[in-house]
Image (cartoon, rainbow, N blue to C red):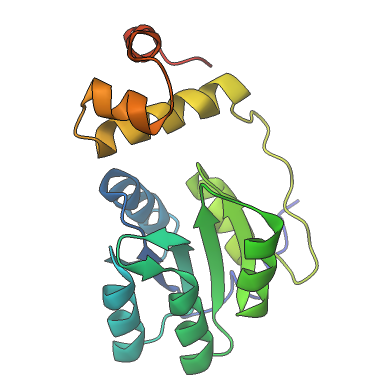
Amino acid sequence: MADAQSPFEARADKSLLIVDDDKPFLTRLARAMEGRGYQVEVAETVADGLAAIDNRAPAFAVIDMRLSDGNGLDVIARLKERRPDARGVVLTGYGNIATAVTAVKLGAFDYLAKPADADEIHAALMAQPGERAKPPENPMSADRVRWEHIQRVYELCGRNVSETARRLNMHRRTLQRILAKRAPR
């Protein structure tokens, strides 16, 4: 028995704007979403995201909350201004209830914590209003989420162990031991 398509999956316009300043994540997500039939446009800053929306407002958007030049909520607000029927999902590694409420009030359809994968994002974009996303089959363990966060900060610090340890408020040797180990499952 085939699954019924949501009205959003049946849409002819599958244009998707992804705004995130994490280049590796942006590239992986864009590729994965293209594989799901979206016509993807990417932007790494609030300014580029706003320009893309002004040029051609997409049907869907995935926007990081914190960007190098500002707040992703500005991009969601502009998207809803230019295309009220668009569906936007806000991603963040710094989630709290207040920002989730603000994102939804500004027009975001859903709010996902990073690291979110393409399946979770696609499900959020296609969900019916009021429908809750299914919990993931194999969610990342807390140890894996911690390891991913440490790796991200390490990369953002140019692979500088001392600077990463300072920013994570961690002893340098402890960080070195964590970095020497394999990723937890």
